Amino acid sequence: MHVAVAWDINKQVTKERKDEIFKLLREAFGSWKWISPIDGFHIVKIENADERDKIHAAVIEKVKQIPEGAYFVISPAMPSGSNYNGWLPKDWWPKLRERTS
Image 1 (spheres, rainbow, N blue to C red):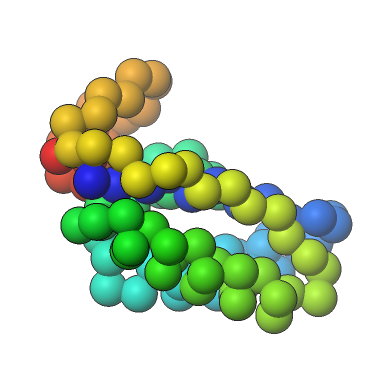
Image 2: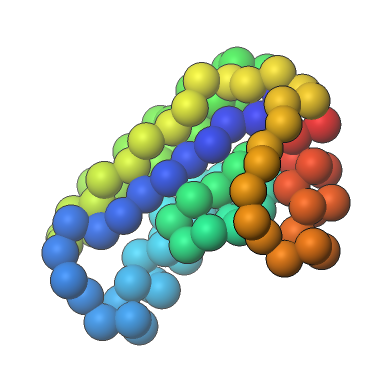
């Protein structure tokens, strides 16, 4: 199973600040395996729907710490074997499949 999590910052910030904010938000993933093939978009491997709820709650807590504000969306828990299509560097696809299988 896995979830997709995407976020963005509400206001214009410097690249350094954006990197700080994204690092803070990624802390919500704890020890779950994740990949970010596109800036602000993440695929996180989970074992069950309860883990999705834990990630959701953790991201909310991180968002509350960002004075600039941030938006995010999290998918439902998706079954293993879900297929993603797109245009990414060839070596990213095996990493992505690790998190979706």
